[in-house]
Image (cartoon, rainbow, N blue to C red):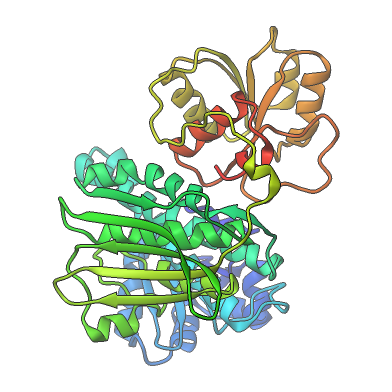
Length: 475
């Protein structure tokens, strides 16, 4: 069952007490729709929310499908999205995500921010609903290969949307962003390596043409949104055996403005004039599995970085995105020689180390432990700080979730270090690190949820290589 059906969900959730009967609503739904919502049946409430689109028959058909275990999303032109899923056999539940509905604690947000967050929540609802439905089929032994393929595809979509909603959340909590000097040349080189598996899967060639040592000043999360979305979008849009060029170059004009130019170009099918005009509108996509949210996120991030974004395309001749940002002087520390740092997705050398993994989430704990064991590590995985503290022996590395039930992850790290059990460590978190980390509990690397295995491997290599936290936090 989808986690958002939990009673403490941050989205409005409506659950049938019985088919055709009154509703149970969570706090977010009561806040958004008023106390009278629980007195209505789900079909009637949906008709009042959705109006004439879709019609009554469409709503009833979707409800009956959800009660039998299906999943369907109803959408209106006004921006209301309602995902219908099975709550229990014979009973449906509705998850609401709508820019028109004022969600709790959203008073400080702009309408644009609420619209973006609702849109991405809608994408997550669709992806997770598909995962839940196909997982049930696979468990019953029906169409297993097809189920696994669709689960993987839906999980990829959910991963991308979660990345975007995290970026949106950071923008809401910190509208100005944390401006810092960033080596754009190294940043783009990093992305070219991280995209390698996706590109190899489609036989797409990534061609970096990067002038070294070009720096900009801005928020790292926004810059990541720009570079990653443009590059990944190009790879995804290409047919097999296409090419993507990633270029970074200095560009000075007659007014003596010092700029850095990032270009992402592909030799794919290109876009006609109408598609170019709609490209930066939320939900518009030319890809079969696209979300239509990547390019709007790019445009907004470029504006917040004080740059410009242009799209050039001719049907049949590919697309070229051009981003210009103010060029910055490299900080003094950047002139010092750095240790060798291998920025890659697959590392050939094994993890010949002993690792302690602490996470109360069983599935995540087992996934991390298995991934590290496949790379040659000896892993001890436990569910709580209490078990970690009584586990005998010392460890080369600890991978610890920040939000544990008994104590925070940084507090556990301090205890383990005080006892001489571990030195190097990575914290796993779905948010920014808190500013009140305890002394001795600072991580050597950060793994931000949601992450792929390449993110995990990269962060742990940084932790073991004594890289500073400022660089480790990019993983």
